[in-house]
Image (cartoon, rainbow, N blue to C red; front, side, top):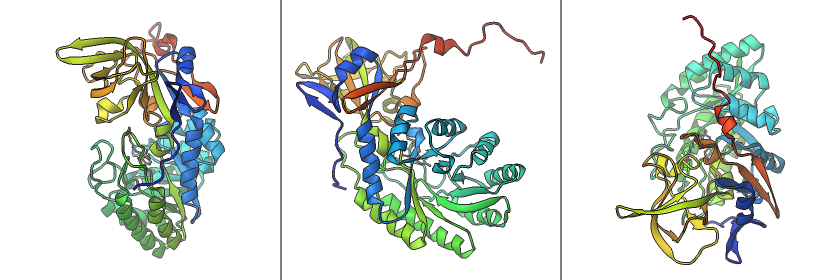
Length: 426
Ligand code: LLP
């Protein structure tokens, strides 16, 4: 690691925090709080940096929509040249609405329904990633019914161990639910190669997320390459080698991911196999572009803990309570001094916190805080628990900003509830 740190879109000017050319106080005053803010130029910069290091081999960067799927943000990435990776019929719809062409979309996911598989084939996605023999059978049936040959890739479980990953974001080890179990691959491949309804065009893996050490890629890529060679020998018409996502974001004092080292691991392998390289980054592209703005409502010392109670909590950012994840929190306009506090939200859950035992800028009621590195897995994991509307999303581009997702209203929240009941006799 020890790589160049990409530009930080958030910086202090005259004692207050700005995103690019816009003061966060101005956004909070106009859009209210809580609110998610994203820097368009940080998105472009990360996409371009990754694109540049992969230049040695034909490649495609398919941004993983699961990290953040707002149309306004997707359009920035699409316009920069990025492609899309989706894991549900809903994400497929979002990618299409944001203007991604079907053959710029790959469709993965461990539990695709028959309807989702059909939608993917009908749309003509570049690759449908198959994760089991049972799923392959459904893909074959649906392709046959539609009278087409579906282009598929195998997502295999590379059975690579990732040290230091939170157990909930490790995905590529033996015994995880994701991917075709390593030992099952030959049988599933034999079936696919014999089928007139599918074309096995790619191999895919995802070794894990937030890979602060890139070494798991070394193991994963070499195992996937071996498999590619075996399948090529058996006549598989492979065209794509997909190394998955997992490049890390900087949440704290982590070193920046060494993109050059990443390229050294993946580029020569894809080149030697004669395959086009695919990567599926989510977090790396969007995490650092984002900040969550929240206003302090109360300060409450209780039983030895000093609580800063904010208008955002686990419903806006689940990562601290779900993964014990660290997100830096700073006062947008520090008043001077620090204090040791628990930063919590208004939700009726003791597990509702953004930070615990944190030494941070002293914050008082009315102060505006920025929770950093929230561009990935923030809004997309938002909850409406306690009937709290989801916060708006704002895109900053240079000296301009726009609401890309409006704040949910109370009407939005209750809209699906039946007013009069239409009973069906059982
Ligand atoms: N491709 C596949 C097949 C994946 O399973 C994932 C993430 C990605 C790509 C994108 O991974 P990334 O580049 O963002 O690491 N909610 C968790 C992260 C779950 C990631 C699951 N899979 C969190 O907030 O940390």
